[in-house]
Length: 252
Image (cartoon, rainbow, N blue to C red; front, top):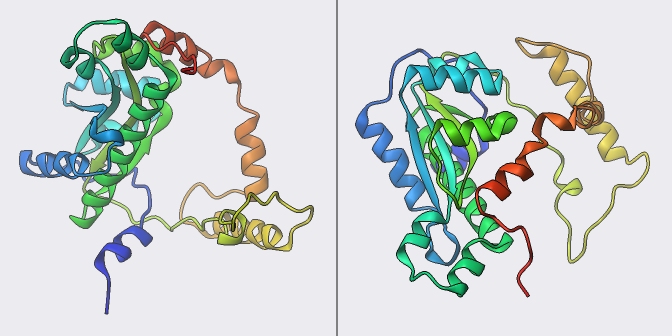
């Protein structure tokens, strides 16, 4: 018996080319509803979603992320960790200030926003839509905060471009389960692990054979290249978090 949910999940791929057809109000509402039915820490629903329909704001996001194709998506969402709403719902006192500004609550908001994002991705794919989750909005966090008038105790976590696919790219092979799934304790990589060697070869073949942007690269080389990026590009993230009122101090 075919399980349509598993089929959707296991067939995932990021879509960066769209037909240009806009999502209907009903489709947008359905995706938001899927987000709302995702798991949320302590039922506190510590996230908000901003639909970006203003062409000028989309152009700014394209500049920040370096991905102009997002302007041609059917719809664009900004996923926001949000403790500001819950601050408005609670009496102002020392406990409220300590809790909502804590690292614990920051992480809870990030988790809620990320889980909601994945629910929207899966819901969209079940409707024949495609999407790309974009952490690149953090390339200029302070500008994103200003662009969307985000109040204290909120933080932009992810962008989500959704639309009708104009491509069906090859699916990137994931790491073998032996390298990411362990029993009872963490298992470090072993030098010259044959499983990793085989995976590196698989990734090399994938990059050689895929339809576009072919290159000669293993997974190991990919990680090394990612780590070689200039960290200054996102060094303002901590500044932005503090600006937004998160103490980043563990509660005692």
